[in-house]
Amino acid sequence: MNAPDRAADVRAMCLDHPEAFGPPDDTNDARRLTFLREILIPTLNRTDGGKWGLLKKTNQGDRIPCDVLVWRDTREHFDVLTGVGATWLAFGVLVNPAWVWEPAIPDLPPIVVPTPPAPPSASIDPSAILAALARVNGALTAVEARLADLDAREPPTYRGSLFGIAVILRPDRPH
Image 1 (cartoon, rainbow, N blue to C red):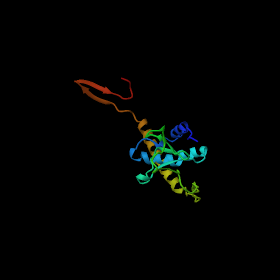
Image 2: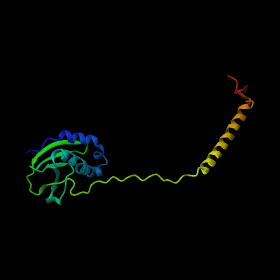
Image 3: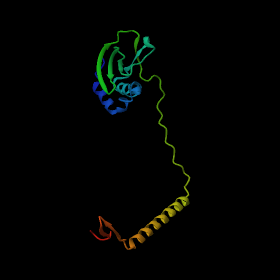
Image 4: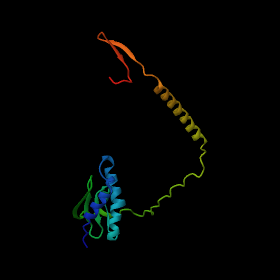
């Protein structure tokens, strides 16, 4: 059987995982390989019975490209990721015998999601917090008293001259 066209599935997964693409450039290949290995291939394999895998270039130090899928049965390979998202370019059957199908995640143990720790059970003594709030309240009361005192005073009158003309200013009266 030829490899099924999963371009729409790849495009949808890429849209769901924008963190796998774009800057910073120095981590783009590593993020795409992780996405390919841990999300894209396992998701496709649930539909296609485990036939999708990575391209392993044994003649290049077992290099694994971060953007290529291989269909195990026919050795067809597809460029499926760019630096910014999905693509689906069929490159045909692998001709180089040193290029092989590799499972995406070989022999990994099941993922265990840790349980978050329980909140501390010790009660907090509120006396220090209450004392600090009392000091803040006292300071606010002093500010309120000072403002009330300033409001109760008769506003000052300013006297002077401007260009030889006597001027009297009273801030509480409109000009």
